Amino acid sequence: MDLLKEINEWVQKGYDIRYLITNQVENGYQAEVLAGDMPNFTYSFFIEEMEEEIWDYSVDTLEEGFSMALEWLKNNRK
Image (cartoon, rainbow, N blue to C red; front, side, top):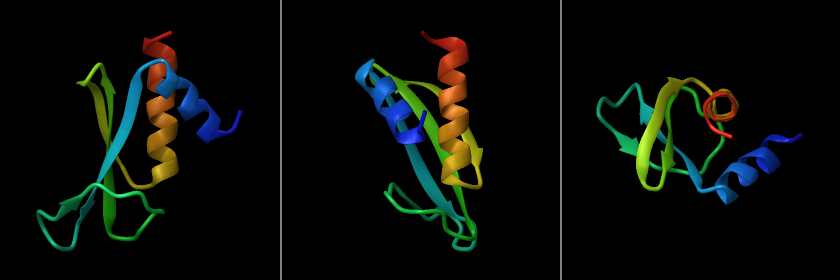
């Protein structure tokens, strides 16, 4: 199953998968963006369930973050 389809299925169930990017070069700069992978940035992924944060993790690539978020949902939610 492709990643986008799987993400949409969880969104339909009421889970919100979000991420912040943090520039490692300019300390403290954060922005919520919809963009591809960028060098010198880390991604803080988090999942919200009914507006409550239930999981968070920092990763180096978007694909890794989405994959880990989906894996967590599969293992901890139905």
